[in-house]
Length: 510
Image 1 (cartoon, rainbow, N blue to C red):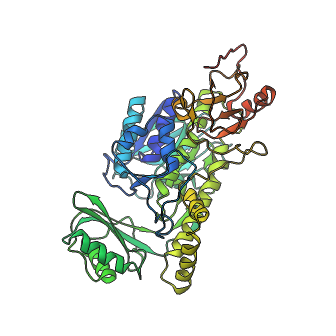
Image 2: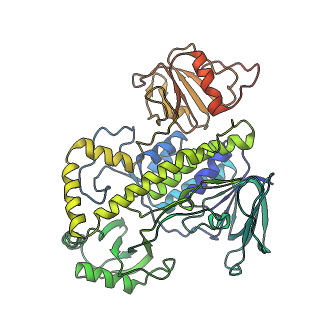
Image 3: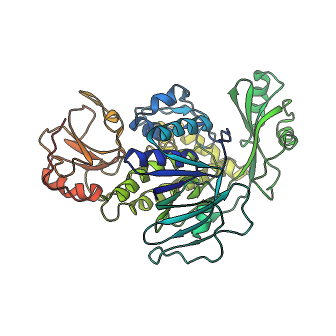
């Protein structure tokens, strides 16, 4: 029996599995694809995701294969300069294809001892008071209509009926569905997924072109004057990504367009198809926007696109999933290993559901600004004028890059609930102290203590000119759980995030 089954080997599932293994949790990742598809739907990591990697000591691997960009155009494609004074030590977008991100995260998970079962499709879930049974069948052999879910009395899920498949069965204490926008886990749970269906569709292709870069850029610049949803992006090695509005909605968006279909739409918008040929990848996506009603159903949780879908405008999707995993990993590990305080696992929904709702609103707003309707174009011109103010430009980019995310921990110090940026210390830097995924008391007074919690919280006595508090208590995800200088107040806050103290534990600051 495993501690956790993670369904889905995309970026969200891979990071989550690594976070769990960091705490000794026995994890298996189940993935329906026999091997990586090599597709790169996302092409970049925003600042908060870069911080996440830095907090776990992974950033250098990604920097060596990526490229830093500080260019505008991320909010609704409005071309404004990259803002200055972003609240991060990483004020850039890291350009790196999704398939490379997945490979690096898979390497990390494997190093930590995560097990993988590929080529298996989930067809059934049954949970009870002790755990969850997952039924699977080899990919492509599932019987149409097969699959059911049932749950223990405390889960609130009505019992399903019928067979759950005759393939492999695994059992774990918890299951996390990280299996994408068409999540089987979510469907088997029967959790509501309210929102809006797709109204428009976009075609995407990675192809070679038969025109010079200068000619392509000139044509695209002219075409975007009337259709801002059209664009190209150089990918290197002579490949380009073409993005063009489709002519209506496909009956099945899981079926990719043909090269001829892509070229026809490009000609309709730009007057030429650039001699596109040799497609590496073709796809289509809609602007459906949906958010799951709850992230947790008993012993089954949802993360990433399984919990929320939205248009890719602003490039927030993959990043939102990684940040879900970073929030959930240490909490689920605490539950499995036995020290989680009451309500800690439920705080995953309480914290991440509002963040996803804000991202969905953000993409809704951006999508409206991409419309060719006169009213929308007038609003776009107004927003472009407002973005000439640095404060507005920075505000919008910090929303997209998740630097503004602050969880509601109640009243207290201004830092409470916010993520702590990497800061310099006399003996190094803050993020280097977070690699193990433990809590951290950064103590400038030198007189505080985490005695009783030393098995979960590190205590470092050091100083920083950038820290506006005598001391801060950080959760494993880097958010500020407490700030101040009073030992009694600190001891009152430690149990909320790190459970009950262990008697007779002594902790010496380093």
